[in-house]
Image 1 (cartoon, one colour):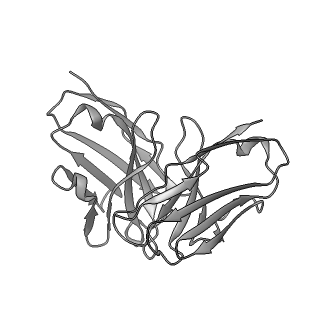
Image 2: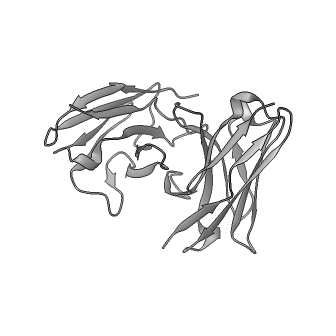
Length: 119
Length: 107
């Protein structure tokens, strides 16, 4: 069955960077994209960007474009999301999700990774 | 960016009720509209994609309709496990924006 397993919770200081991993299994990693979505405490869902593991192409949300980097390692079927220059309003649960290659909807999700930014 | 507006933001309903949630896009998105269900502390779950296609494994009491700018998610007979927050999302153009959510609570 399709599974996306994310790395554990992180606590970071303002200005630091965080890297969240997402290991995929149960399907051919390169035939789907990976969406990254975050959710601040008590808030709604915010799409951060998309990466295609087959060719490394990315699309980032403009508001995060200067601080976010998404990569994949096809040898381990793992996607990574790097967010730099962290601020307190980056505190959120970060999700990876498998993305349909034609219509970009997310049909399977990771369990989420809580990133807390606090001095 | 395309703005997605859901209504209502919350509703109270009883088991067995028919529930309708609407989602309006700020510009036409054809049928690139998806619905997700999220329970507290859990990841979202895809219910409907492409406006009206039921995701595998999702009960048939869930249905979606609409095209262009106006969309609807209907739960034909609300079950206890359906109390959750529902989000629409457009996947027509980047950024893939979500609606603000509709919380369905027990009456």
